[in-house]
Structures are given as structure tokens and as C-alpha cells.
Length: 322
Length: 105
Image 1 (cartoon, rainbow over the protein chains, first blue to last red):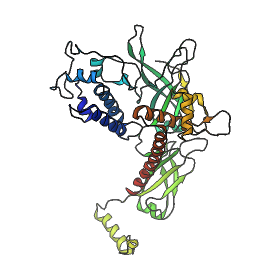
Image 2: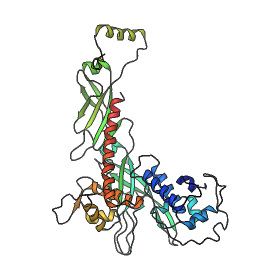
Image 3: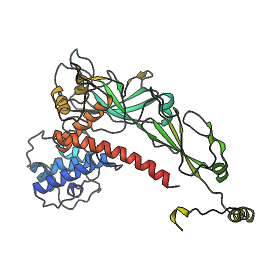
């Protein structure tokens, strides 16, 4: 288990005041909040900051953490010394953060595990707080990554979810379960799929909650997606663009033949109506022309370019006035 | 591992969610959802109906609102502003992406 330097994570000195720590936390939380930040590791950073703040904002936990000594470096292999927390009285609970089941092993080895609400994340289900007796189970939420092609045809995907749960002896354990889920045709980025009764079990006679899956597309090597519309860059040879041609174009539902108009310039968008993601009003597929030059890597090819130069009076910079 | 294939309901623009659906999915009270409506953070499909119905996008906005309020301590007018700005950023980024692809040629 690695030692975590909570001061380093928060970017504050070891003698920082509680006010300084609070200010640093608020600033970092805004920066790395997964709903706001676009950085790839935002969610992990946000959890790390939350964990550091959980310790440093609480004078009892901070004092206990400080007495581990200042010789530890972040990432160093760490095991809490026996009786490390002797002489410290924890008031218990005090977890104001709601994602405390995602605290690191390092945190848990020091302060134990409080509550059992887990954090969000791909393939991880989490609860959204709250609780009560004799009531419907809580709704759970998770993300599911799918391929663009799945949205065109529909598919079934197996997803593995972890959810913290109380075992018979009252300990919190991570339960892993695999669900086979039908991905409906026409789904788009950010939409939710509701699976009735797959959330937390209900209390007493009440039914289980629902599981909401948030759909996210895996990045595609050739297509870009915007809502139900799909974009594709289509490379064309100069003669295809200049003279017009019929070319084969890939689409997520199979290749199509598309007519390229004479004089197609690079950047021209061609709309293939209804060839985007299917829906009541299906999206469109936009093909964006890209003109690719063959390399002049042989004397013959060079000669062809020279011939064009001499026989065409063409100034590509005429609009620039030069 | 189960072999059964679970079929879910796709929550899209056509899906209509009740106040109860929304408050349950966000683990919050119906009063909090009503406050979101009062601050314009989400809007029912029609104010005329006696029982409000919400679109799938309202679910997305309400859940984000809940997380922003819980994690960052933003008040509801701030949450409503943040939601609008986040959507604007998303739409601008998507346009920027199209534009950049057009000009990388």
C-alpha cells in the first residue's frame, strides 16, 4: 500500500491553516469536478482531493495523520505502525463526503471505512445518498461504454458492476455482478437506459430500485458523433474532386456508393440524409471531403505535376490579392 | 453470471418522467425538484398539466445539479447558471471539433 501525501495532493504546506485548506479544497473541487472538468483523470483526482480534505479538515484526523511523521513520501510503501492512533479520540462518523467507499486502501487502513456510498465511474454502480426503512430500494447509476455500431443495430453487452453491500456480519463488502444488457437501437451519447428493479433491494415488502446506465460511446477511429448526426472525413484523389466521381464510402451500417460532384473542394460537406444514428427522426451522416495529393516520388509523377503547372493558369492565392 | 438479457427503457427526448421518477433517480425530495423548476434549472414539458412530466434531458440536468450542489456547495441559482454554461460549452466544443477537423486538411 502506498503512502499518500494529503498536503501535496491539496497543494498546501504542512502548517496550512484550516481556512487555507478549505480554500484549496474548494478551488480544486471546482477544477476537477467530473461534471465540469474535461480532463481524463478528473474523477480520480476529485476523489483523491475529497479523501485528502476528509482528513485535513478534521482536526482529529489531521493530528493523527501528522503524527505518522514527515519522513513519508507519496507513493512509498506504507503500513500503519501498530498502535499508531493510540491517544487519539475519533468522534466517529464525520464523513460529510458522499463517496467514502471509494477512499483509498491507505485511508481505510488509517481511519476504517465509513458508510457505504460508492463513487461514480465506468462499470461501477453507486448510490445517490439518502436512506430509510420500509421503502423502495435506492436507484443505482453506472456508465456503459458502447461502440457507435451498437447504436445503429442494437446489441447486447455484458457489464460488470461493483456495488458496496453490507454482509451478514455487518461489514461492507464489494459485490460484483455481471448483467447482460440489451442496448436499444438509436441510443445516443449521454442518454440513460433504465433497468427496472436492478437497483438496491427494497426494505420490507417494497420493490427494488432501478439501475440507470449512462451511455457513452467509445472514441471511433473514423467517425465523430454529434447527437444523432455522424461525421466522416472522406479522402479524395485530386481528379475525383475535380472531375466528379462515384466513390465507396463506409458507414456504420455498411458501405455505400456516393456521387462526388464535379469541382468538390476540400471541406465541402455532403449530407447523407437519415444515415446517422437511427431514431424517430434519424440523424444524418455528413461526409466531409478531403483532397489528398499523390506524392511526386517518381520522375513520371513529377512530370505530370509540371504539366499541370504549365497548362493550367491557376493561382490558389488570388483571394489573398497576391 | 446471468444468461438472461435485460431489456431496459431508453430515456430519450420522448420519454416522459414524473416528479416521483425524477426525485427517486436523484435520491432527493420532490420539493427539491420543484425548487429546481422554480429556478429554471429544469422545465416540465408543460406547465399547463396538473401533473408535471419531464424529458430525459431533465433527468440528466437534475442529476448533475444534485452532484454540483452536494460536492461544490453551489446554491440553486448558481446550479442553474452552471448547467446552462456547461451545455453551452458542450455545444461550442462540438462545433469547435467540427471546425478544427475542417481546417486540419
